[in-house]
Length: 261
Image (cartoon, rainbow, N blue to C red):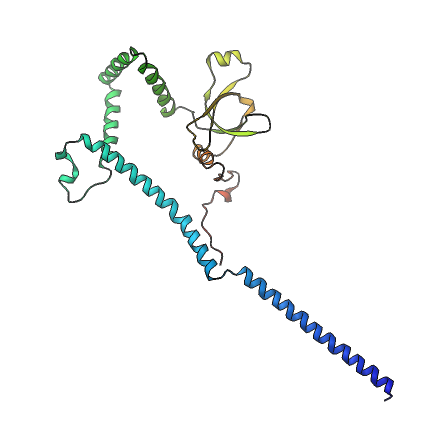
């Protein structure tokens, strides 16, 4: 073999060896990148415990707060009602343990008995007599009349008040506000307007008991499929709790806290 041919052979061998090392390096670097990505995606022990802890809060916090509020309300009613019950009739006098909710049961039974009595002939006459006395009092008659009308409107079975959640363009065109239909406009307001009007209540956030009463043409409201309870949650949370779309059946499925491994 001539020297020139030997040099060419050595040079080709060197290039092939260098290409092999380079391919091996690229393969190793590719494997390292995959290993780093897997390590980054897989949470460490501390991150996994943190996600478990947050999932536990999501599950237990609503239940704990609900039970606490219910227990507080029952204790408040018991303490308020049992003050007017003679000690001899307290359940604690006959049982070795206290019965939470005894005062609340007394209130429910008492209200039911009053309603049954007021539905009778004698009860209606007594109610009419009491209302006549209240009607002669300058300040109390206005308060009583307004409260009675509100309770009759809200609690009547055939009432449609606060049964529908709607959207209206308020306070200007292009801005939408959540509102509740409280009834159909009547009287002088409907007579002086050309379109068929609807009474809507626009609540404020986060206190939905305050708000604005608006008279809106029926053609300018957008009725929503969400329930009144979902609408109230949306208002109280300031938009943090968004009800699922009723048109999407899968969105109505209950959400389960999920922990990524």
